[in-house]
Image 1: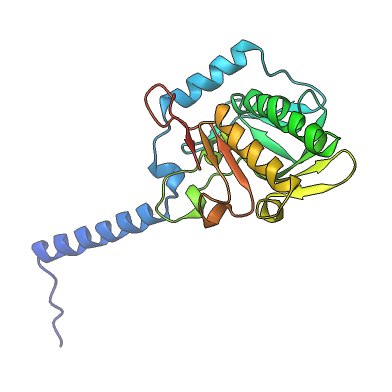
Image 2: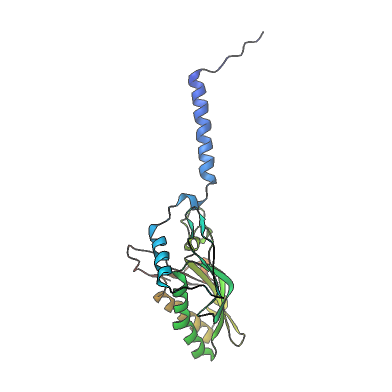
Length: 229
């Protein structure tokens, strides 16, 4: 008869402890960045203040969406924006944004984009080409990076514009061109720094060679610092 030697209590404890550590590590690795990063308190405060101001109202082109919350990601009362500037400029495709971004986008379009389009091309912009809005992800989709402002519906990526006469101006082609397209794009990019706290274009990095990135991130305690490139 062969005798089976049972492991000692100490060895059994070591085996169980090792197994538990492995399970904990695997579980931690499987948790996405949205569960590893805390949601800053100022985000909900800014959204609440914007909603209370009455600047953003539901309409035929501004549709309230259900609360989005995936870990730290999301917004309490986001909107599906199908058109901006009182419905005169289509957003294609529709953008999902939290309240604070919507008036900032409107001011940029009304104060800079439309005047420049009329001055340079003789017609207004009829459509903004949306490259991205809400999406729970890290910055530039880089593993291990912090959550992007897109994760909080606090950002908008724009890849181009369609004019009222049907002409299209893209960031990718127009930025490096000669003439009115480049003047238009570089002006609306530069002036965006008045409305957004983060503005990144083709000269910023390779991730933005074909679009503008705008957001309302808080880079310092009072949100007064603007990062533009």
